[in-house]
Image 1 (cartoon, rainbow, N blue to C red):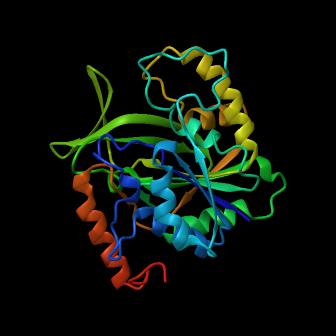
Image 2 (image 1 turned 120 degrees about the horizontal axis):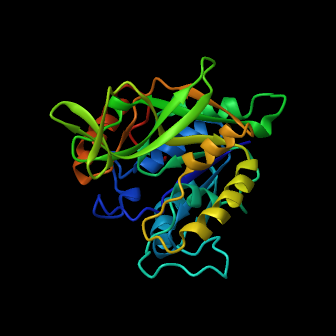
Amino acid sequence: MSTLLILAAGMGSRYGGLKQVDPVGPNGESIIDYSIYDAIRAGFHKVVFVIRESFADAFRESFESKLAGKIKTEYVFQELDSFVPSDINLSDERTKPWGTGHAVLVAKDVINDPFVVINADDFYGPNSYRLLYNYLNAEKQNPERNYSMVGYELDQTLSEHGYVSRGVCESNENGYLKTVVERTHIEKVNNRIISKVAVDKEVELSGKEVVSMNVWGFMPSFFDHLQHYFSTFIRQNAGNPKAEFYIPYVVNELIANGTIDLKVLKSQDKWFGVTYKEDKPDAVENIRKLIDKGVYPEKLWK
Protein backbone atom coordinates (compact mmCIF):
# COMPACT_ATOMS: atom_id res chain seq x y z
CA MET A 1 0.00 0.00 0.00
CA SER A 2 1.43 3.36 -1.01
CA THR A 3 0.16 6.89 -1.63
CA LEU A 4 1.10 9.34 -4.37
CA LEU A 5 1.41 12.90 -3.06
CA ILE A 6 1.26 15.49 -5.86
CA LEU A 7 2.55 18.99 -5.12
CA ALA A 8 0.28 21.23 -7.18
CA ALA A 9 -0.08 24.40 -5.12
CA GLY A 10 2.44 26.44 -7.14
CA MET A 11 0.94 29.51 -8.76
CA GLY A 12 2.80 29.08 -12.06
CA SER A 13 4.24 32.61 -12.16
CA ARG A 14 6.90 31.71 -14.74
CA TYR A 15 4.44 29.64 -16.75
CA GLY A 16 1.71 32.26 -16.80
CA GLY A 17 -1.29 30.18 -15.75
CA LEU A 18 -2.61 27.07 -14.04
CA LYS A 19 -0.11 24.73 -15.68
CA GLN A 20 -1.04 21.82 -13.40
CA VAL A 21 -4.06 20.97 -15.57
CA ASP A 22 -2.83 22.26 -18.92
CA PRO A 23 -3.33 19.51 -21.55
CA VAL A 24 -0.37 17.76 -23.19
CA GLY A 25 -2.10 14.53 -24.31
CA PRO A 26 -4.28 14.04 -27.43
CA ASN A 27 -7.51 13.89 -25.42
CA GLY A 28 -6.87 16.73 -22.99
CA GLU A 29 -4.67 14.76 -20.57
CA SER A 30 -2.31 16.76 -18.34
CA ILE A 31 1.06 15.57 -17.06
CA ILE A 32 -0.69 14.79 -13.77
CA ASP A 33 -2.95 12.34 -15.61
CA TYR A 34 0.05 10.38 -16.89
CA SER A 35 1.68 10.42 -13.44
CA ILE A 36 -1.43 9.01 -11.79
CA TYR A 37 -1.85 6.42 -14.56
CA ASP A 38 1.74 5.24 -13.99
CA ALA A 39 1.24 5.17 -10.23
CA ILE A 40 -1.90 3.03 -10.53
CA ARG A 41 -0.03 0.57 -12.73
CA ALA A 42 2.80 0.41 -10.17
CA GLY A 43 0.39 -0.45 -7.33
CA PHE A 44 -0.45 2.85 -5.60
CA HIS A 45 -3.89 2.89 -3.95
CA LYS A 46 -4.40 6.61 -3.19
CA VAL A 47 -3.49 10.01 -4.60
CA VAL A 48 -3.39 13.16 -2.48
CA PHE A 49 -3.34 16.56 -4.20
CA VAL A 50 -1.68 19.49 -2.43
CA ILE A 51 -3.35 22.56 -3.92
CA ARG A 52 -4.47 26.07 -3.09
CA GLU A 53 -8.09 26.35 -1.95
CA SER A 54 -8.69 29.02 -4.60
CA PHE A 55 -8.47 26.47 -7.42
CA ALA A 56 -9.91 23.43 -5.63
CA ASP A 57 -13.04 23.40 -7.79
CA ALA A 58 -10.98 23.34 -11.00
CA PHE A 59 -8.99 20.38 -9.73
CA ARG A 60 -12.00 18.38 -8.66
CA GLU A 61 -13.67 19.05 -12.00
CA SER A 62 -10.55 17.85 -13.82
CA PHE A 63 -9.92 14.63 -11.89
CA GLU A 64 -12.86 13.35 -9.84
CA SER A 65 -14.93 11.74 -12.58
CA LYS A 66 -12.04 10.18 -14.52
CA LEU A 67 -10.41 8.69 -11.40
CA ALA A 68 -13.61 7.36 -9.78
CA GLY A 69 -13.25 3.63 -9.15
CA LYS A 70 -9.58 3.63 -10.18
CA ILE A 71 -7.80 5.20 -7.22
CA LYS A 72 -8.83 6.94 -4.01
CA THR A 73 -8.43 10.75 -4.09
CA GLU A 74 -8.00 13.35 -1.36
CA TYR A 75 -7.22 17.08 -1.38
CA VAL A 76 -5.29 19.18 1.13
CA PHE A 77 -4.67 22.92 0.99
CA GLN A 78 -1.31 24.63 1.26
CA GLU A 79 -1.83 28.20 2.35
CA LEU A 80 0.53 30.78 3.78
CA ASP A 81 -0.57 30.09 7.37
CA SER A 82 -0.83 26.27 7.13
CA PHE A 83 0.86 24.66 10.16
CA VAL A 84 2.06 28.09 11.32
CA PRO A 85 1.58 28.51 15.13
CA SER A 86 -1.02 31.12 16.05
CA ASP A 87 1.51 33.22 17.95
CA ILE A 88 3.66 33.78 14.84
CA ASN A 89 3.29 37.10 13.01
CA LEU A 90 3.99 36.71 9.29
CA SER A 91 5.49 39.34 7.01
CA ASP A 92 2.89 41.43 5.16
CA GLU A 93 5.10 41.11 2.07
CA ARG A 94 4.77 37.32 1.99
CA THR A 95 2.03 36.10 -0.35
CA LYS A 96 2.93 32.48 -1.18
CA PRO A 97 3.38 29.38 1.01
CA TRP A 98 6.73 28.19 2.32
CA GLY A 99 8.09 25.75 -0.27
CA THR A 100 8.16 22.03 -0.96
CA GLY A 101 8.80 20.89 2.61
CA HIS A 102 5.81 22.90 3.77
CA ALA A 103 3.72 21.42 0.93
CA VAL A 104 4.44 17.88 2.09
CA LEU A 105 3.75 18.77 5.72
CA VAL A 106 0.16 19.87 5.01
CA ALA A 107 -0.67 16.25 4.04
CA LYS A 108 0.34 14.95 7.48
CA ASP A 109 -3.17 14.10 8.63
CA VAL A 110 -4.27 12.15 5.51
CA ILE A 111 -1.31 9.82 4.84
CA ASN A 112 -0.43 6.82 7.02
CA ASP A 113 1.39 4.64 4.46
CA PRO A 114 4.68 4.82 2.56
CA PHE A 115 4.31 7.65 0.07
CA VAL A 116 5.93 9.15 -3.01
CA VAL A 117 6.19 12.92 -3.55
CA ILE A 118 6.16 14.39 -7.06
CA ASN A 119 5.78 17.76 -8.74
CA ALA A 120 2.55 18.27 -10.67
CA ASP A 121 4.29 19.63 -13.76
CA ASP A 122 7.04 16.99 -14.10
CA PHE A 123 6.87 13.76 -16.11
CA TYR A 124 8.97 11.03 -14.47
CA GLY A 125 8.10 7.92 -16.51
CA PRO A 126 6.48 4.60 -15.49
CA ASN A 127 9.71 2.96 -14.30
CA SER A 128 10.25 5.63 -11.64
CA TYR A 129 6.99 4.72 -9.91
CA ARG A 130 7.76 1.00 -10.02
CA LEU A 131 11.23 1.57 -8.56
CA LEU A 132 9.89 3.67 -5.70
CA TYR A 133 6.89 1.46 -4.98
CA ASN A 134 9.04 -1.68 -4.83
CA TYR A 135 11.67 -0.03 -2.64
CA LEU A 136 9.19 1.41 -0.16
CA ASN A 137 7.29 -1.85 0.15
CA ALA A 138 10.29 -4.21 0.35
CA GLU A 139 10.96 -6.07 3.59
CA LYS A 140 13.56 -4.15 5.59
CA GLN A 141 14.90 -4.46 9.10
CA ASN A 142 13.95 -0.89 9.94
CA PRO A 143 11.62 0.45 7.22
CA GLU A 144 10.87 3.75 8.97
CA ARG A 145 14.42 4.99 8.35
CA ASN A 146 14.66 3.75 4.74
CA TYR A 147 13.79 6.57 2.36
CA SER A 148 14.49 6.87 -1.37
CA MET A 149 14.52 9.15 -4.39
CA VAL A 150 14.91 8.88 -8.16
CA GLY A 151 17.85 10.76 -9.66
CA TYR A 152 18.41 12.10 -13.19
CA GLU A 153 21.44 13.54 -14.98
CA LEU A 154 21.35 17.33 -14.89
CA ASP A 155 21.81 17.94 -18.61
CA GLN A 156 18.69 15.88 -19.31
CA THR A 157 16.54 18.11 -17.11
CA LEU A 158 17.21 21.67 -18.31
CA SER A 159 14.83 24.00 -20.12
CA GLU A 160 15.82 25.81 -23.31
CA HIS A 161 13.60 28.71 -22.27
CA GLY A 162 14.92 29.91 -18.93
CA TYR A 163 16.49 28.99 -15.63
CA VAL A 164 15.45 26.09 -13.39
CA SER A 165 15.97 24.95 -9.80
CA ARG A 166 17.62 21.58 -9.12
CA GLY A 167 18.87 19.66 -6.09
CA VAL A 168 22.40 18.48 -6.92
CA CYS A 169 23.09 15.15 -5.21
CA GLU A 170 26.21 13.46 -3.84
CA SER A 171 25.98 9.74 -3.02
CA ASN A 172 28.34 7.25 -1.34
CA GLU A 173 29.77 4.11 -2.94
CA ASN A 174 26.64 2.12 -1.98
CA GLY A 175 24.25 4.51 -3.69
CA TYR A 176 22.97 6.24 -0.55
CA LEU A 177 22.59 10.01 -0.54
CA LYS A 178 25.22 11.97 1.36
CA THR A 179 23.92 15.44 0.66
CA VAL A 180 21.76 17.42 -1.78
CA VAL A 181 22.47 21.07 -2.54
CA GLU A 182 19.52 23.13 -3.75
CA ARG A 183 20.58 25.35 -6.65
CA THR A 184 17.79 27.75 -7.55
CA HIS A 185 19.13 29.31 -10.76
CA ILE A 186 20.62 26.92 -13.33
CA GLU A 187 20.59 27.70 -17.05
CA LYS A 188 22.43 27.13 -20.31
CA VAL A 189 24.58 30.10 -21.33
CA ASN A 190 26.62 29.85 -24.55
CA ASN A 191 26.67 26.03 -24.40
CA ARG A 192 27.76 26.08 -20.76
CA ILE A 193 25.65 25.10 -17.75
CA ILE A 194 25.84 27.86 -15.18
CA SER A 195 24.49 27.97 -11.64
CA LYS A 196 24.14 31.45 -10.17
CA VAL A 197 24.81 31.12 -6.45
CA ALA A 198 24.90 34.87 -5.73
CA VAL A 199 24.45 38.15 -7.57
CA ASP A 200 28.13 38.23 -8.51
CA LYS A 201 29.06 34.54 -8.29
CA GLU A 202 28.57 31.68 -10.76
CA VAL A 203 29.50 27.99 -10.71
CA GLU A 204 29.91 25.97 -13.90
CA LEU A 205 28.44 22.46 -13.87
CA SER A 206 29.31 19.51 -16.13
CA GLY A 207 25.74 18.40 -16.79
CA LYS A 208 26.45 14.86 -15.56
CA GLU A 209 25.65 15.64 -11.95
CA VAL A 210 22.81 13.54 -10.52
CA VAL A 211 19.97 15.82 -9.52
CA SER A 212 16.77 15.46 -7.58
CA MET A 213 13.68 16.29 -9.58
CA ASN A 214 11.60 16.29 -6.41
CA VAL A 215 10.48 12.67 -6.71
CA TRP A 216 10.96 11.16 -3.27
CA GLY A 217 9.95 7.99 -1.47
CA PHE A 218 9.18 8.57 2.22
CA MET A 219 7.80 6.75 5.23
CA PRO A 220 5.12 8.35 7.45
CA SER A 221 7.85 9.16 10.00
CA PHE A 222 8.92 11.97 7.66
CA PHE A 223 5.92 14.07 8.69
CA ASP A 224 7.10 14.30 12.30
CA HIS A 225 10.57 15.29 11.12
CA LEU A 226 9.08 17.95 8.84
CA GLN A 227 6.94 19.40 11.60
CA HIS A 228 9.91 19.59 13.97
CA TYR A 229 12.13 21.42 11.48
CA PHE A 230 9.34 23.65 10.17
CA SER A 231 8.59 24.82 13.71
CA THR A 232 12.16 26.09 14.01
CA PHE A 233 12.22 27.45 10.45
CA ILE A 234 9.05 29.51 10.75
CA ARG A 235 10.10 31.12 14.01
CA GLN A 236 13.37 32.18 12.39
CA ASN A 237 11.89 33.25 9.04
CA ALA A 238 8.36 34.52 9.65
CA GLY A 239 9.46 38.02 8.72
CA ASN A 240 11.43 36.97 5.65
CA PRO A 241 9.30 37.34 2.48
CA LYS A 242 11.69 35.19 0.42
CA ALA A 243 12.47 32.28 2.77
CA GLU A 244 11.77 28.74 1.47
CA PHE A 245 11.42 25.51 3.45
CA TYR A 246 12.70 22.93 0.96
CA ILE A 247 12.52 19.14 1.23
CA PRO A 248 16.32 18.78 0.71
CA TYR A 249 17.00 20.91 3.79
CA VAL A 250 15.23 18.41 6.04
CA VAL A 251 16.67 15.40 4.18
CA ASN A 252 20.20 16.76 4.62
CA GLU A 253 19.68 17.25 8.34
CA LEU A 254 18.30 13.74 8.82
CA ILE A 255 21.17 12.16 6.88
CA ALA A 256 23.80 14.23 8.71
CA ASN A 257 22.57 13.19 12.15
CA GLY A 258 22.19 9.53 11.15
CA THR A 259 18.39 9.40 11.48
CA ILE A 260 17.69 8.02 7.98
CA ASP A 261 19.24 6.23 5.00
CA LEU A 262 18.13 7.45 1.58
CA LYS A 263 18.72 5.28 -1.48
CA VAL A 264 19.27 7.03 -4.83
CA LEU A 265 17.46 5.01 -7.50
CA LYS A 266 18.26 5.42 -11.19
CA SER A 267 15.45 5.40 -13.74
CA GLN A 268 16.01 4.89 -17.45
CA ASP A 269 12.87 6.88 -18.27
CA LYS A 270 13.14 10.32 -19.84
CA TRP A 271 12.19 13.22 -17.59
CA PHE A 272 10.51 16.32 -18.98
CA GLY A 273 8.51 19.19 -17.58
CA VAL A 274 6.69 22.43 -18.31
CA THR A 275 8.36 25.15 -16.27
CA TYR A 276 7.66 27.69 -19.03
CA LYS A 277 4.89 27.93 -21.64
CA GLU A 278 7.55 27.44 -24.31
CA ASP A 279 8.24 23.97 -22.84
CA LYS A 280 4.75 22.74 -23.67
CA PRO A 281 5.29 21.80 -27.37
CA ASP A 282 8.20 19.54 -26.35
CA ALA A 283 6.03 17.88 -23.70
CA VAL A 284 3.25 17.29 -26.24
CA GLU A 285 5.75 15.76 -28.68
CA ASN A 286 7.27 13.52 -26.00
CA ILE A 287 3.85 12.19 -24.98
CA ARG A 288 3.02 11.54 -28.64
CA LYS A 289 6.19 9.46 -29.04
CA LEU A 290 5.35 7.39 -25.95
CA ILE A 291 1.83 6.73 -27.25
CA ASP A 292 3.25 5.66 -30.61
CA LYS A 293 5.59 3.24 -28.79
CA GLY A 294 2.64 1.71 -26.92
CA VAL A 295 3.65 3.01 -23.48
CA TYR A 296 0.27 4.75 -23.15
CA PRO A 297 -3.07 4.30 -24.92
CA GLU A 298 -4.33 7.03 -27.24
CA LYS A 299 -7.08 7.81 -24.74
CA LEU A 300 -5.69 7.48 -21.24
CA TRP A 301 -8.91 7.19 -19.22
CA LYS A 302 -11.46 4.94 -20.88
